[in-house]
Structure formats: structure tokens, C-alpha cells
Amino acid sequence: MYEKWLADRTQWFDASGIRKVFDLASKLKNPVNLSIGQPDFDAPDSAKQAAIEAISSKKNGYTPTQGAAALRTLLQKQVDDQYGPGVRETFVSSGTSGSLFLALMTLVNPGDEVIIFDPFFVMYDALVRMLGAKPVYVSTYPDFHIDVNKVEAAITDKTKLIILNSPANPTGTIASEQVCRDLAELADRKQIALISDEIYKFFCYDGEFASPAKFSKNVIVLDGYSKCYGVPGWRLGFAHGPSEIIQQMLKFQQYTFVCAPSALQYGIIAALDTDMEPLLNAYRRKRDLVYDGLKDHFEIVKSEGAFYSFPKAPTPSAAEFVNKAILERELLVIPGNVFSSQDSHFRISFAASDETIAKGVEILVDMVKK
Picture 1 (cartoon, rainbow, N blue to C red):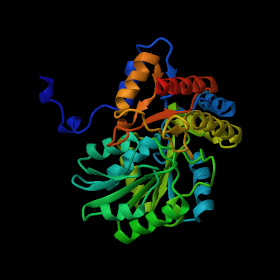
Picture 2 (cartoon, rainbow, N blue to C red):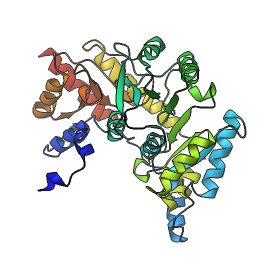
Picture 3 (cartoon, rainbow, N blue to C red):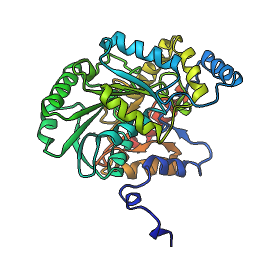
Picture 4 (cartoon, one colour):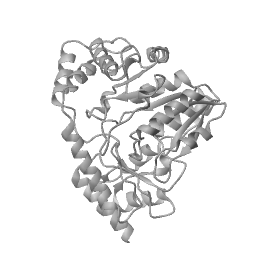
């Protein structure tokens, strides 16, 4: 009976493959978990205390749709200092995923084409399909770096949007300043939109972060506080871009999320003064633990940012290799076909303790040897 009630869009994409791994993991007693895409450090004490005080002082109602005035003022100043006053408008969203949804709702019509770099964050593909549009994949294999010539070749008269994620989930690669410039100029020349998902920009290990927004006022930037301050459950993101686009995104936020969680916005204000550099150094070391432990046994590109590595499986099917790791060795990693049209790689999250990383590396190396 219920099949008659369901909207057609429920059939346009499947449940996340990540969720399937988590469901399988729930049956394990002592899993070695290198699958979770969230930091393993907690929120700064100052942020937690400020959030508690905000709750206690009755800051529990709605904020303006664009965010609490105190936080949005700080955010707008940061963006003005970086890009110049009056160039880009900001607002606080209900998570970076929330602002991604709002941006796609604002920009994409059914039948449009959206260019996505393969491998990709799972939500890009699903949301594009949810809106009745077509994802167009531009491969970045084998080194996961973007060839802008391939992007230009993929553009048709139906192309509406390009989505860039740098540093990237699941590969950990970072787009160079030249690539960011070339993408921004290509988008402007072809008069198509460019979204830059910058949620992992704090996690850059070997060089400087670059944003295409530096080269075009038209780029829509999505960012947030979840990863860098260890608060993914707080659901606090932000976006900035041309006022004409941001105002339409705010209209959709008003009728969906209403506003970001109110009291937690005051917690983030306190977090902004926290020195997170020691944690960045710790994650650089975790990156090295994974790379140095696997490089002699796996085909692996050294992660430049985020907290993921994306090695090639030693078997024809990465999904089969991952299932074997889970079922026989209780090691949780994510098969690459969750993030890609290919079933050749798998994702490791090194947002875990050094002990857990060492155990996971030992299991993977042992599986290859056997």
C-alpha cells in the first residue's frame, strides 16, 4: 500500500553506503573504526561553557534567519577582511550540508547538469538527483587532482553548476591556486555557477589553502565550524557569495531549517578565540601514520588535507575487500564505490586515536601479505 504514497524522488537514489557500513558495524563487538567522518577531539571548553550560559540565559528561541547578530557580524567582518567590504554577503546555516541543500535548491532546476569531481562527497550526487538534475562526473583518477581541460570538455548547454570540494572528501587532495583560478575563470566565461565547499580548509598539512572566491565574486562558498572545532552535532555552517544568491538561499532557509541552532551559535563565538594549531599538528602526524604505514603495501596518494586517505584496494573489487576487512577483521573502512563510479579504492578516516590508526594499518598490511 505504501508504495502508492511514496514520491518518485525516493527511487532516484539509494541510502548512503556509509550508513550501510555503520549498520553492519553495530553487530561487531570491538571494531577498529577508521570510518567516521568527524573529528575525534571535543569542542573547546570555552565553547561548551558559552553554549551552556546561552541556554541558561534563555537564548533558546529563534534567531534571525541569517543568524544571531553577534555571530553574523563577526563572520561578515572575517569575509570583508579577506575579500573586501561589500563584495560578499554572509549568513549562518544549519550545518554546511544545510547550506549545500539551500544552494542547490536556489540554483538547480530539473533537467540541469551539475559537474561533480569523481571521487565525490556522497551528498553531492544524491542532492542533485533529488532535485531532478543530472550529475556529470569528471574523473580525477589516478592522482585525484583536477584537470580543468576535462571540466571544460564536460560542459554542455545544460550545465548549470560546478561543485568543488577542497580539501576533498574522500581523497584528501587540495586544489592548487592555479586550478582555483582556472575554474573560477572558466565558470565566469561560460556563465555557470561555481560552489566551493571549504568545510575542511582548516586541515591543510603541507601548503596554503586556496579558494576560487579569491578570483571571482560570483563563487558561492560553503563553510562551517563542525570539523575545525569538533562540533559536528551542533549543525552550524555558513555561506557567503553574491547578495542576489545569498538572499534566495535565505528565503529557502526560512521555509526549511528556519535558522541555525540558537544557543550553540553563542558557543561558536567563544570558540573563535581558541588556538586549534596543536590539533592541526596532531592530525598531520595521524596522516603520516597512515601513509607511512601503507605506502609500501598499497597504491596510495599522500593526503594533503582533510582527514582521509583513499588507497587502492589490492583486489579487483574494493567493496569485497572492505567486506572482508569488516567481517573477518572487524576493521571499519568505507568502500570507494560509495563516493565514486569506480569500485577500486576505499576510504580511511584518520580522525581516530593513534592506537586505533596503528591497529587499522596493521590489519590492512596483514591482509595484503596474506
